[in-house]
Image (cartoon, rainbow, N blue to C red):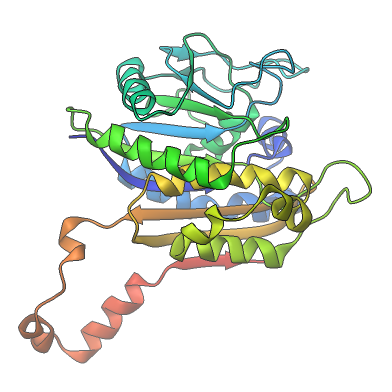
Length: 314
């Protein structure tokens, strides 16, 4: 049986992609951003997912104001890199997983979520930048990727609750897939930022940190947040964070926060990142009193220290 083992969130700032492509990651301005993802790359290299589902928003590359799907699932065998005005990014084409994508589509649509199915679609920085941050710059991506594009650009975007419930439907679909696959799901975009208007450059770190806290411990609270609150507190583009709720909905209710990173700014955006892991069946079982009693106190302290999440904040 396939299973979702973890969820990852990441900003997908286009300037991060430009810094990678132009070999500027070691510059002081960018160094702190990329150092924050070094542990994440080590983590995902150990997990070795068989498939990644990447929830992102298209930036007028595959879609336009002429055609605006709320949820668009990539079902193709390959997704070329979009030309966003200066040529396609020098990253590998994305290999899809048509069989799993078709299974997800059938399960989710029969659960009454209306998806647009894309058998041909180019992907832009919204998808490729998070892949870079997690996997580096390989000659080819280490696993197939299923893109899920969400409209958070044109009014009306989906609600946080709708996104969370779509995540629940995806979880059900994955767990009913008969082949043994490890799946990691990405939620991308955000955090607080506004790129135009009188509040251009807005960043609200207090809101961002509270959002990250609730994403781990109380996601249901976030599902009740209206669009207006996202825009007021996190800027016009902060509504992208509803896509993180698709990732969270696809996980178990109780998760372990493996790692968190936050820094400002990157370009004009707050960069937020979190890794949440589903607990294994073994970890859900409480240790017996007998086993705990036999363990020396020093070893208990060391074990507890080893379980502490790693956080970097600036």
